[in-house]
Image (cartoon, rainbow, N blue to C red; front, side):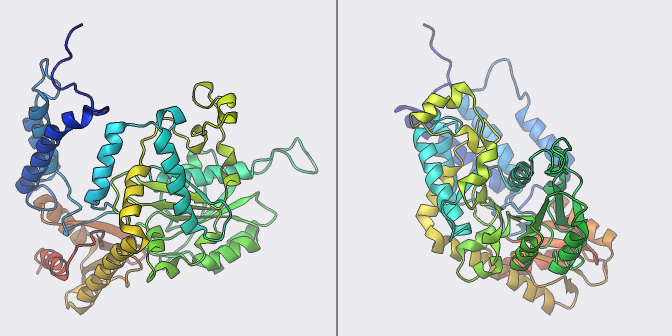
Length: 477
């Protein structure tokens, strides 16, 4: 037999760690030199400059004869690091893009090396058991009084919302009516606020549902009175209704009044889903968890731990109060979950996702939970939210800035006093192009605002002062 070419050693087995060790040294060195070359939160120069640098460093990307593993790793990892938006830099604060914990990243390496596929037990024996234990423990945080709460592992809030809408559609799916069994039932009607994540209407489109009724949220939250009026008007004119609320909007981090909305949904017989992709991590915090009162009254709740959970992407969940909620996902493929295998005790993994092949994303989550515990994660949440309050204080005390509102989570909206939308957009793009700071943008009924989304629990007040000084330096005089 021929000898496999250099660079084709496998990551698994007893020899895998030995093959990985020198490669990891190369990767870590390249990450270090790439970050040093970047020397900031973002590479300077804008898209054309970054694209040219990547092309020049990596050409040819697919040569006839390979360069060897260390050269390829060194070149591409260095190039990626030098051209990265680094969420570990305190001045990289535009999006819900967290700096992952080193601990979780190390665990993710193990998941990559072992490479379980979470679609049948015989591909992931221990990983499937770990996923069941960990997802149920997290679901119990959401539904502390429920019997048998469970959670599906998802790629994030978008998939969680899509699954929630699918489960609601199927729960409301009986065809026909009592008076005319041949008459098609009215489709599920989704009701959401203008503050809802864009994946809600997109999922409705994907699932063949009517366009959601989108209610105004002029103050950034969905109010019970607005929902009550809408649902009262729908009575007798629409079929089943799904009300969706948000615990942590992407624009401002606002949290809808969950308990009051749950009351309204119950009064009108509507199903209730909460998108807590951003704010769900408040469950870890003894200080802030009361902001999520009413969460456990939802039929489904989405969470993301690659936001305020400091996990590498992806780390999403959809929590439900009991396994019956997940029944519509049941699916059978003989080569993965044959009936006789399931009856013999092999776990059915295929019915826990719309995806077939799935990474063992649960490992990094489980390692983090075990290492830090709820209180350790809660402290990280508390530190991060405190930093947002500090930034709001600095803005309110500054004569040249205007604060949109006190932060509910870790997002702070602000702008130079009197700046128009064009000026704000130009300031943001200039900072991006210079590679000095990464700020987001949010459009509200009061116009455009700069958005600082703080997700680094190590951010200090001096970092926040530096951020404001950078913006101030670009305000037209």
